[in-house]
Length: 395
Image (tube, rainbow, N blue to C red):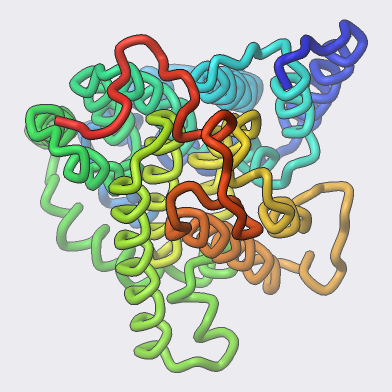
């Protein structure tokens, strides 16, 4: 896994990514999610309320961050948005690899980067220009800092990402499990302060509570609902009553949090402990939240894939890859490719990853996926720790 990939392999991976991003940049629909924030920035510059647009589902801090984009022309954004989005995802992959001291030029690093070209969530995220990409980069950076016992810096990174889009809010529970109260205050304080400041500059910020939140809590509308892979939306489409579907989603979210707590308490290699606990918390939120979209999986997938060199990591089980297989762009499933059915495929991926990771989190200490005890010489619990990382308990 740590062997450097050959130069032809590196060139092939780079070519695949360039061709993919170029194709997306030439599409008339590219950057459609980013346009919502560009409109918000322009509305603010024109003296109007950005929240008059019901599709603006972001914090006030995001509006201020979108103002520089509002000054750019559509032709510039047509090229800039997919390129920057792809580069941020690659930076997130690099940061995830660094958690486990794996070189980006290793076979794993190059294969992961090149494989993105065929991965439907990557193509979706680059095509939409969705600001979820901030969390794709922030989560591995934050976990890498936490693995080196720099919890306050990790909280600052996560808090800055929440200012862009509040995807990483469930990560606050990781700081609770680690009893890092000062860092937790930093994580909550940064987006809160930024949003309060931005709200003072935005006309009619109360529309966020009276118009935007009700629209979001009701699952949006027919425009976005076909893409929503949350269980609260998908299960009713299969015939389950809405109340029962909501109960199932909440129950799974609670069970996921309990599984994350069990994983944290088990200890072991601090890097793997952080990655699996954080990923379990995020997946618990994804199965319960409304909405949950295809590209959300990019938030947790890089850090899970980067753990592959460790013997007991989640990607070592074939079920991990089976769940991801339908998202391979080279594999077409005609019955699930239509606009009205693609959310079912995405829901299976999110729920499948949730199940695979939950089993891993609840496994007994020192036991591999086949039920055999791992030898102490090769067990991840005894892997060398990064410099400065605590091996067991957290203060």
